[in-house]
Amino acid sequence: MSGNANPFEPPAGGLSLYLHVPFCERKCPYCAFESKVPSEGEKDLWLEMVERELHWWEARIGRPSLATCYIGGGTPTVLSGPEWARLAEMLESHFTFDADAEVTVEANPNSLSADHLLFWREWRTTRVSIGVQSFDDAELAQLGRLHTAARACEAISASLASGFSVNADFMFGLPGQTFRNWARTLSQAAASGIAHISLYQLTIEPGTEWGSMPEDELSDGYLPYRWAQWYLPLKGFGQYEIANFAKYGHESRHNINYWKEGDYLGIGPGASGHIKGWRYKNISGLSRYSGSLKKGASAIASGERLKGSRRASEAAVLALRMKQGIEMEAFAQKYGSDEESRIIKLLEAFPEDLYSVSGNRISLTPKGMRVANRI
Ligand code: SF4
Image 1 (cartoon, rainbow, N blue to C red):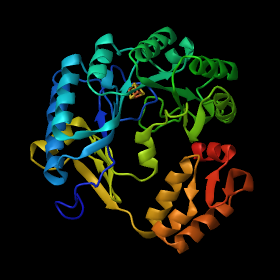
Image 2 (image 1 turned 90 degrees about the vertical axis):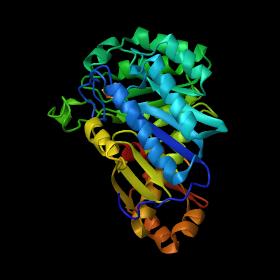
Image 3 (image 1 turned 135 degrees about the vertical axis):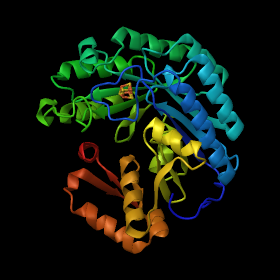
């Protein structure tokens, strides 16, 4: 860890927590996330190490109140009922939660059970984010997903019936994906009762099973993305960020905190965090992560305090992800007018139809969002 051993003051408020569950039932061929099929005893080891990591943080920042909490992965629904109970107990003992805290859990349709929903309801979960990816069985099989479209529909219905605000993730740009299939998936998503939709373009990641697939085997993402930008708002889902659409009031507060450079702790192998301009990344791989914690050291692999132009650039890039873009007066106050001029100049180098200036605000146009999404 860079800097002093105890560099943080307790956060003033509005803290978020991301907790990474590094397990999946099966590794998808395109996936570069930190996840593996757990072998015997690994889930217990992970829980024990998360507890140690939480203690490490508590010794430094106390027991802050969480405005948002996001338990993602990997596949959090590979955890059994008793494992969820243990995890929730740990979180309750190391944090307090704001009265209106947004608590999101990620779910895979294949492993989501009635017991999960019941437990989450009784705990403090408010949102369920389901990795649906497609409503086309052939596409799901191609992606190596374990669930069918029918199973995804059941997972959505059961989550809605349990009273959660539901997000579903979808993927476009799959090899051979037709526009017709994509439009059908989006239409089914919009009619399913969910309140939030996240869209991701398939990319080829080195080190994955599909890592050597030539990029040109993927279908072009331009039309599916631009279609979503036109179609989803018609169905009541406003685009509030490059990859995210929500019904009014169902935007993810947790993710908005990331894009607004808010403070968040990242817990678990490979997780990232940000506290007051200091970004850190945890050690990847369960055995190396636990090796460090067992020695009484932190789980942090590297950290960096961004300053000056780099910090301003990062803030601008994050703000431009959101529909509201950059509020230039506030930006200049925070980073200085030289940085404001530099960012404006950089944007002016792009074609005019990619960004718009309205009053004191600079934001990406829908077409600009597509370009940014591709980058
Ligand atoms: S379920 Fe998600 S996290 Fe797990 S391997 Fe598949 S894409 Fe990766």
